[in-house]
Length: 283
Ligand SMILES: [Zn+2]
Image (cartoon, rainbow, N blue to C red; front, top):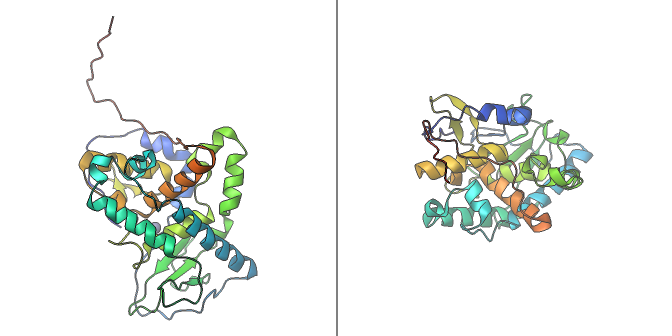
């Protein structure tokens, strides 16, 4: 994980805002490159139901990525999740566009080595990284035959993509809040695809956010933290969002919801007032 640039201003309210979602955010998605692993066979350790859920999640991840391929820096979602157009233009724009294109091309083709889209999916925690808080992890073995994504028990406790959309859209208030859709199986699958070396270039990781005192706050996961990462990315003109997996996932989910019902504006973040701000009444 990479540390984000030290924030220029303090946000003491951030902890309070994120509290209701702390449980989900603690369930960090792990990613690591490893060597000397004995790779399991596809769907090792997955029962019939899990295999079926994974096949569906792969399709949903491809659908989500397809909603983001026409990436445009002037979209409001781009500003919210990657930063202001003034900082995302040029090289960063191309990086984001190419990463979405590669993720969208990663279609569920289970035996297609030729197109470099073969995936080995497992449920047996072969690298021992699930613990009690991880949804999934990815391994890009060296030398590479193909990447492996392992899905942990916690993944199978999450809503399917379709289930999450149904849940969120059953209530008007909920439907415009990205947190209602977060951590569905399609989003988690897309998150893992973005970590694959052949997809995320340069390497896409989970950026660690820090407070203004330099204290580690946690990885930029979920819509709120991703929006803050983009906000400070803009401030510092540091393109961290282009290397953060969940920024892509939240953007793609936003595009999907926008197409269905209009722009999901929540959670809303705001710019804190500068200290010693003097307000002059206009009469
Ligand atoms: Zn991750």
